[in-house]
Image (cartoon, rainbow, N blue to C red; front, top):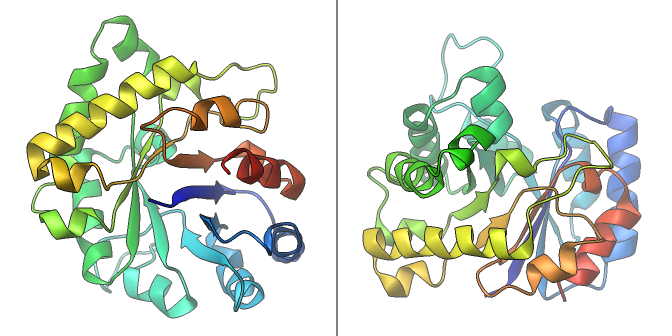
Length: 254
C-alpha cells in the first residue's frame, strides 16, 4: 500500500502564510508519486489552499468537522462544507480535540460515520496518555478507542479510513528538546492496533489499513520509524510548518 504523510498545521498560518507554504510544498514535492501527501490547514485557509493545490499531487484535508449536516451549531463545519471546498480527508479524534475540547469516542464515532457518508476519508486518531501508559493500560485504551470509534463501520468502509497512533506522552507540542517514542514502542502499538482490527474486520481487511504514526515524527527520526513493518506513514504537526522539514520526512518515507 502507498504510504500516507499528513501535514497538520493546527492553529497556525493566516491565509497569506498558508498560500506561501502550499506553493513551497508543491515546488519541493512535485515529483513525488509513490506517497500520498495531505495538507490540513486551519478552516480559514482551506479555500485558498484548495485553489493553490488544484492539479497538484497534494491532497487537501481538514482538521475536524461536526457530524450533523446543517443546523444551529454555532462555530461548527459540516462534511458537505468540507467536500464543497475540495477536501478529500478529515482528521477526527485528534488528541487535542479529546484533551482540550472534551471529545469522547462516541462523538468521534458519529463524526466518522458522517465523514464516510459524504465520501470523506477519515484519519482517526487514537492513543494513550502518560498516566495510562504508566499504569500498563495502553492496550486496553487502544482497543476501547477502536471499538467505540468504529461502531457501525462496515468492513469495506474501513479501507477508506486511516488510523493515526498518537501516544500523547510522546507529542512534543513544539518543544525541540522533546524525544518521541522509540521505533520499537511505535511498532509494538501499531502491530497491536492491526491485531484488534483483524479481530473486528478480518485479517485481509486489517492488513490493508494504513496505520500512521503521530507522535513527534520529524526529519531526524522519520526514516527509522518508517522502517518498521506496521508503520505506514506519519501525521506531522510541528515539523510540517516548514516546507523543507516536511519534504525531509517525505524523502525519508521513500
